[in-house]
Image (tube, rainbow, N blue to C red; front, side, top):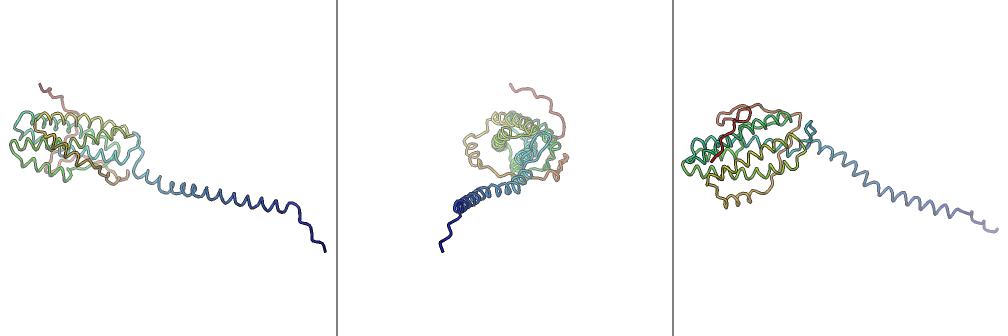
Length: 256
């Protein structure tokens, strides 16, 4: 018998099928990473955003914003008592004037930060942190010109550290209330820096070394869930007098 002639077109269809199969496999290999990435983004990215940044009527509120609001409150909890010590123990008019500026500035700034905290649902501390308590203890035990030097040195170092933080928050925050608070804090800190330097007791060489040594950024504290953040009401402690929630103090006469 003669061999049956091949069916025309079978080889063509067979080759086309292989090509289509190969293309389908290639497309699937390319798309799979995209699907996987989208799944990972939905599973993690959105959750991270919801945990660290929350929506408010005043704009997004980040973890750094909340940390800044807390630090403004902490500053008042120890710098106002430090100013009161300078008013009482300072041996020169310049030191006592610097103390008055600290009291006036943080009385006003503390009222501002507590209003902002209430509006944003940020919980606030009611006492200084451990480092700030140590600074206050140092100032309470110092006397005479030793007090003047320690007061100017410690407070100028603290204000130098927070000055850069205020600028960073002011430049990057998306929240209008935090922006306003940063403006207020910036004016207050700059005023305090000037009056502290006017005491004549700031050692700028030592200050530069200390600021450089503490330049490493510190991670922000864990975020507080908005539902769990309860603003605290002002409640004076047994040791430190908290700033009253009043309007800004009357303007002081300018120094000659």
